[in-house]
Length: 336
Ligand SMILES: [Zn+2]
Ligand SMILES: [Zn+2]
Image (cartoon, rainbow, N blue to C red; front, side, top):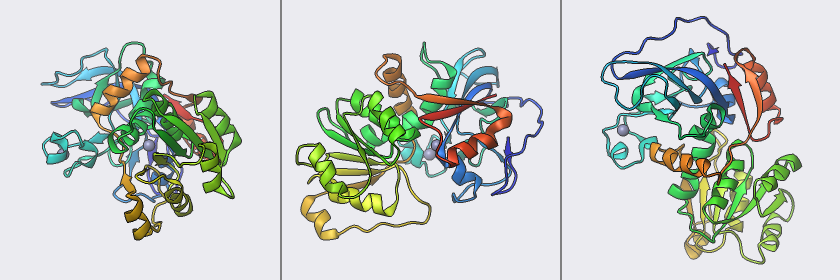
């Protein structure tokens, strides 16, 4: 399904099955997760993207062909794709921070043809074998929804066992932030506007659920017995939620930004930030190393990828409408 022009529906195009070149692999896509970012890409609101592009950045499938020199996967392997195609050579790639690679070749489903397709060709090193017991649908959403949650908490938020984590927004990523935080030994507070999302967060282990609204700061502190959380993962990224969360954080706390409104800014009181030594950090997608940890958590049953809806490939536009209307809990997947 191809985005030909920003703001227009995706179009079904017939393409030949791709052949792998040297160092490349081709998979038969078995599932591809649907992400809120898709709506921003399709609307032309993300800098750096291009059209035409086959969208879909959470693909998983079975390897059907490999090019010369490929050693990490073989035909028949079940794999997911890490959606940042990186240089592998720069300072960041060499230090396990490849989501900020300085020579990024592109992102799958953003600038490079992605997973809303029957077949997908990428450099073989973009594919990671799924751990035994992880199916295609679950495996697909590890690449972003679960991997991004892990990266935000562990890599960028430096979460320690016993800490309290507030998750602002428990949609596709936030619901998995709740689960990963719990698996890493944290107490969790889920915050959202949607009662259904809060209910689902509780079913997946959130210790407290709060509907975002008036007296927010007091409500959070009451729920936690007086002190604010150690760590906040902000998946909404509206100026008002970020600013409210900066007030709710306990001294020494960290606020990790995962969600954003393109073009918006928020205010930080420098004196308050200094006096309380708060940290505001960005967190971009995840690394391949993170995905190894995530697969281990999922294999052991400590984290359960939540998929509530399935759409055939031809219905990606309908799936986008459901997502835009906020009618999808957890993640939806496209099943070609
Ligand atoms: Zn995404
Ligand atoms: Zn690099």
